[in-house]
Length: 319
Image (cartoon, rainbow, N blue to C red; front, side, top):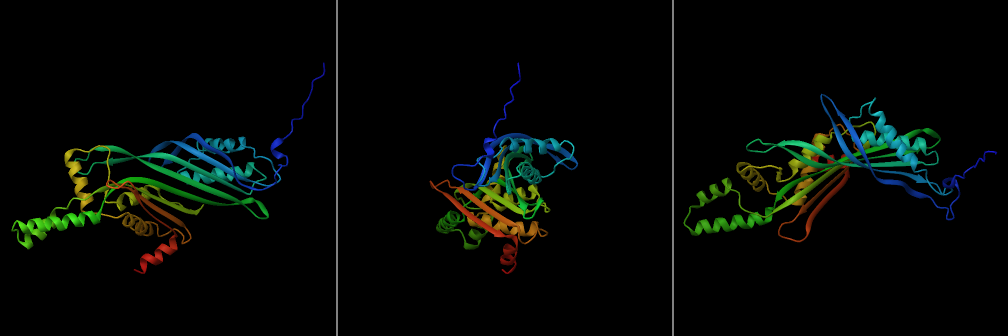
């Protein structure tokens, strides 16, 4: 009996019935374990989610999606022999690999999200605890015109950190009420002023979510830890998983001595980004967001700034 050989058609390579280009074709919600090396420290293992895309020309019905999984797996396997220290570098390597596998594509995009544990100590008793921050990275690779071996790669690194804010407006109202009541009790004005300087007044609080992302060319690095610290220090106070009574007092007092609007948080982050990253190029794209979950309103407060680093430098240094 003769063996039958079937030449299966490459359906993806056939022409579509509606021949238009597609901006993104790929896979989303791909879960992978990622090991990130750290110099002089133990490596970090992240449970990460990837979204992987390429563009698709009008003469091709579909993309070879299995190649996306192959690209991710190959880069992750290479980490074992060539350690990766930045998640954005990992994304850029995958994007570069994707264009090598999808010969019909001109650009590739990779997005990665994960949770990252940071160690903290409570402000008064020094109790050790762990806090979770959300981290994310993106990379895009574009094939160079006339040179299939040249890829222009851009990468992005960012994080979202939770903290708390105290409302300056409501606090000023309570400060005025306290001053009036103390005066009615016969307290001297000089004593009232000293008291109000030492004891911060009540106000309503918000749980704040600050986000910073920086997009740069592939040959520049951005410290994730620095971004986390900038966001934490931009709000009225950090928050902690475990607090004793003296810690609670310290957190509340710190927050109420440092009241901030949602706009103040974004402007503080912008100022600290400029100070922390003087060596980044002026064309680095900075995105800063703050969302405050209101405690006395049903809505949330929001502020954002998107700018080139050079633009922020000019604005801040000219004031």
